Length: 45
Image (cartoon, rainbow, N blue to C red):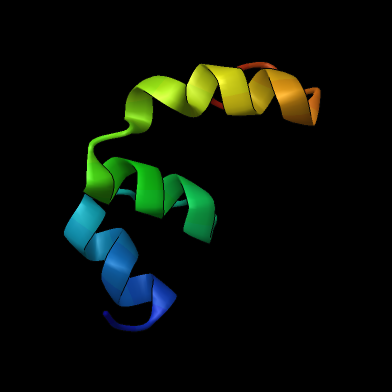
C-alpha cells in the first residue's frame, strides 16, 4: 500500500504505470511482454 511513487521505489522501477509496478511486486512480470503486445507497443517502452 502507498502512493504510486512509493510503490515504484519498492518495485525498484524509476518509471512505470501502476500496472507495471503491480506486476513487478507480485512476481507476474513474465506477463509484461504479453500486456505490451496487447497495448500495441514494443516490450519495455
